Image (cartoon, rainbow, N blue to C red; front, side, top):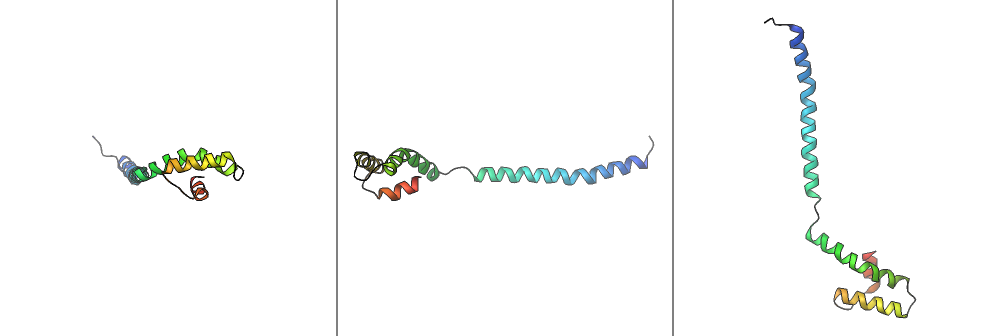
Length: 97
């Protein structure tokens, strides 16, 4: 077996170039997995989303209805029932939409 200087230099160059690339890819994968784990929705986020979904239709009806109309009264009643009591309908609908 002969020791060839060209093979040793080539191996050194490949290691010098390949090692930083491999390490940076490993760091990128770790950073991506950490970001993904931090963006999981909390129970509060899920509850808010569910409530907003339920209130969207009555709020749209409330906002497009004429004042003192049957549609406005029904929408207000539906919003009150969903939230369990009297609320500021305009503020709730601004939060929902």
